Image (tube, rainbow, N blue to C red):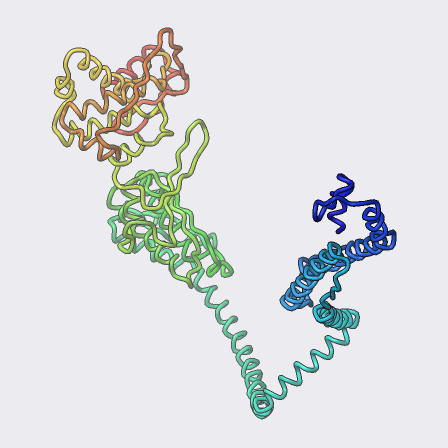
Length: 538
């Protein structure tokens, strides 16, 4: 009737339900039916619905926030299930109130939510009790720690009662044994003190120079050094004299090789001993720096063998030699002293190999995973492959490679190699030989003109083509570690390119050994010219 009254207000005089005409009493009866009390009842229902929705929203919002916070002591599974039950009951009641609002005269009954609410309250109270217990423990931490400690020890005692009784029985026996060991240790301590006194006495005898004199003389005699020997210097303690077989001092008549050899022998025996009783057994690091200068091949082999003995002794954990450094320029000495049959591909775990190069007055040490030194020929190729090579030495490297491979091994002189080229290529090849010979054999009349990067790159390309023209390209790629498909970029010279003049290169090479020509600057022009021509001929 309330909904139909809206249509009657728009069309007075016609019943909205049967569409028949109405009189004045019909309108009056409608007004009396929907009086102010009815409107007040409807407003009260609306207010009840709004309050119910507001309170429900607040309660469910609180529970959702509580579940999202996930407190430690709250049973999330239980309270989540109870919250869903409460949400379902609230949604059902809201639907009932909505129906009551539409049909105020209908008698309705709301579903009770006391069950889910009671369960939720109980869960929260249980969590609060757990929190209170936890806070009480925190507030009385020392009391709780003591109580826990007592409980743990009680548990341990109960579980270990049998073992504890056995321990108490064996403790007395152990104490007796300890007492006996202490007595024995005291006795051994007295014996150790006595042995140390004996050791000091023996070390005094070991540091005598006579055993070293006899050992060095034995080595000199076994390797044919019969024109001199060592003798004890009677006027100075712990010193030696180098004498002839008749006992006279050698003075300054020893050769350089003899001096080097006898100095190394003295150093060798110094490694095993000392000059005083206190340092005979002290730990030491041995550094050997090129001990083979001016030695012939037989003596060089002897020195290499003695160095290998030092290396073997260093690997002994009880040895006083803790570390050995060997530095050398001699490939044969390096191979002899570093050879080890146990080494396969890489380094042994207690050794390492390094190469030291100096460029622009800066020394750089490079470590290698295996022994990088094979032969002098391979070293030349290694220098050629090195990206940090010096332009001042590249000419000598190229010359020695070409001479060794083509002239010595291949029995081909440079002219036959040059004839493999034709036309302009032949001129370039001849220019290469002139360039490398100029840079490695000759001394300039005035100043030395150093090759720049463009010149070096150009001749490196010609160097490769020599191997291609002589059908030796495979050897080139094997030594360079490249493939036939790789190419070398050649730097093209530019016009008016500046020339780098370095006044410091005054070195010539005679029979493979460098000679410093700076001493010629103090001679007369004629003497210098004769000396330089002599070097050029050699």
